[in-house]
Image (cartoon, rainbow, N blue to C red):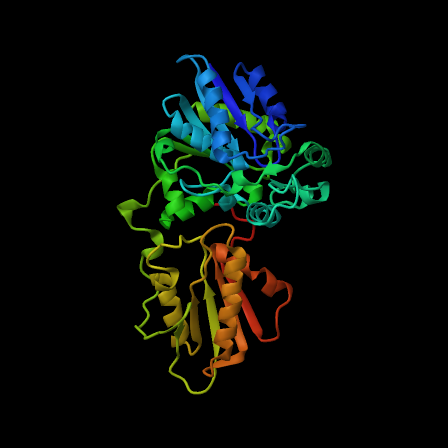
Length: 417
């Protein structure tokens, strides 16, 4: 017998899984929708003092209460719920048959839930609740979104009006501490078979995962280990509301070991460190802060191209993108054509870093345009992969000096970790 423990994300309780639980039960499985401490409707405590450890303990108690070896326990985590799932699996790896991650990003040991939270309003409210002075009995809570805010949240575009009304009516304040406390760093959950469900309408795809794995992206590398499978769902971030039948079917298939595998790069050499496709002469570069300049053999101010790499790229990744053969090659090639090549190292280290990376780009553009060897009225921006997410403001209100915006294999949908 399979027992699915269905763990919800921020602001929600077990009720969000009701339809999926009913479908799993009709198929002969046991489904247990979980409401974590402090997130029950009418909870008198309001989640006061609730921690991530308390939510992990919630799941451990349920796992321990399951019948013996004849029951195959599957922990299913959505959104924030993946953190208590991983924490519980680390404490009871011998009892958990599989972890299923429902579009919840890839939090690592030692990281808090905020690394996978795409909604900036939620991130800001959580940090303010934890770091700010107490302003009343509910100051430790993150207020749930309004109906209008639910509709505008990342990944909500396929929710029906009825689903949005349900979320707005039943959502409760979330204990802020659970969102900022780190996942215990034990590594024990890595031994448990794992399935990831990618919501393609929310920007997560198998193609993206395979691409990041080929680049050797550390966070994605864990998906190449044995026992890991992936599925795509053509939904947004709440498939239990927008596609419950499809989600229930995938959960059953995951338990059967189905799904696609992600292979590690052949020969152990990441794709992004391979040679540049063109044979370009070597050329010296100048390093100025976050940008490398490749200068042409020409007199007078010259046009410039600012090359914007993709990501996320881990903060400790070495070499950094401006030292990758591809971007060194692009910089040299641009200079060989009589244009200043500017290669930027921006700080998109995680899905919550888009604003930081956009600031790095704006600062670099100003720095490049101020260089006397650059024609400040003739500048182009060339984006790659997820770096294309930084192109929005330049496309919405292009300045007069911006002569071209280019994008290679662009990613133009919100990105998850």
